[in-house]
Length: 125
Image 1 (cartoon, rainbow, N blue to C red):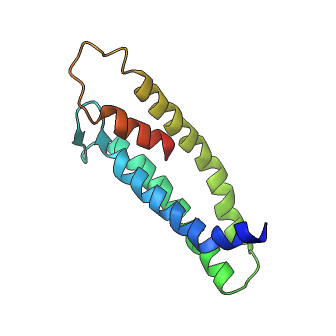
Image 2 (cartoon, rainbow, N blue to C red):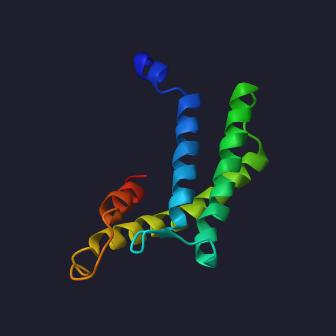
Image 3 (cartoon, helix red, strand yellow):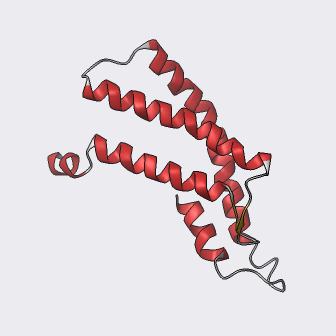
């Protein structure tokens, strides 16, 4: 167990979370059916706004660990907001799986070659 905690440190875990969230924010603007980015659709800005709360929580956790402080009520409130945001994250996972499974439904249409890799990446992340 001690070797695992040396390999997977809290800093690496937070940095990996930031990398995954940043990748998902970029992918939220990407249309897998058309192989284009859509910056003018208001729906594409929901996930980045909610992810900003996640970034705030990661920053607070980083700060509390580096300063060796205990959690406070503000941090707990941010955590409670994240519990509500999990519902949106679960919906995005469902939506990504639905899009990935729709390849057979639109088999006769022209689908970009990047459809399957990008849709799979968004589900995995």
